Image (cartoon, rainbow, N blue to C red; front, side, top):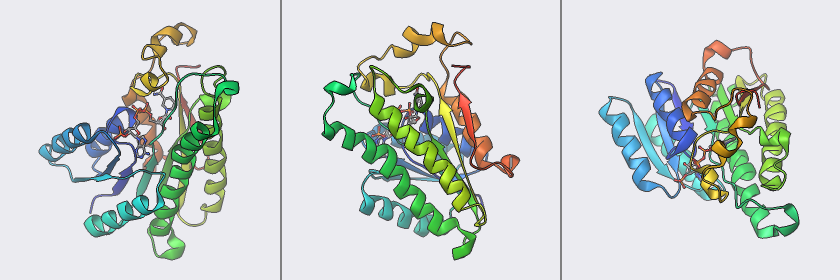
Amino acid sequence: MSKVLLITGASRGIGAETARLAAAHGYALCLNYLHSEEAANELLDSLLAGGHRAILFQASVGVESEVEAMYRAIDDEFGRLDGLVNNAGILEQQSDLVDMDPERWRRVLEINVIGSFLCAREAIKRMSTKTGGQGGAIVNLSSRAADLGGPHEYVDYAASKGAIDAMTIGLAKELGDQGIRVNAVKPGLIYTDIHAASGEAGRVDRLKSGVPMQRGGLPVEVAEAILWLLSDASAYTTGSFIDVSGGR
Ligand code: NAP
């Protein structure tokens, strides 16, 4: 039986690229999406056409009942779970914090932080060796923004990723004797549509001269780090972070 992996926010960007690479590595997949139904269906069709096993599930990671329904669908379809990539994430219009409102903060924290908590909780219930699971791996999508702070753009987003860092460290310790490893990747400037949501689709190109490697990153370059952290090649690695940022 193939290992089963849930990737949240798999319809676009880093999540979609991780899905393609994970399928090539032999994982059976649950691909989560929220709004991008057409892109999600195209991804599913291409994976199925390649002989891979995958299902789609529409759910907002920030809504408990929807996350629980998604995991029940995984139970029904696969009967096991081996890994979770907590990838779904949002940011909002570039702004100083002084001009932001609490509704925005709640949106960002609900998707980026509570969404990751909810998905991790349901994965732990299924993977923990303490409750009859076979162990597994969780990879969280943090960001270099957690260390850089996101000034004048999105301090709220950066803080949400700081919460993901603390969660990664804490859960790694909590689950160390339950067969579950928890790690995170910290992408830098990666070419995806997320920057358009900040109001600057060309943000990577504007900032790339400040990257030691003098270029933005590709989603597949993040996916490669995620796949390593999921794999047995990283069997003694937990509570760790991989920067995928060209040195920035
Ligand atoms: P993206 O291209 O904007 O894609 C975001 C994905 O998240 C989409 O598949 C979207 O699904 C999904 N999503 C958003 N809200 C959701 C929700 N409530 N429930 C379920 N899915 C939801 O973003 P990306 O650049 O690939 O980013 C992926 C992760 O990497 C994020 O956590 C981001 O913070 C992190 N990251 C990205 C960069 C970068 O430069 N790109 C840098 C550092 C960290 P739908 O379209 O179907 O709604």
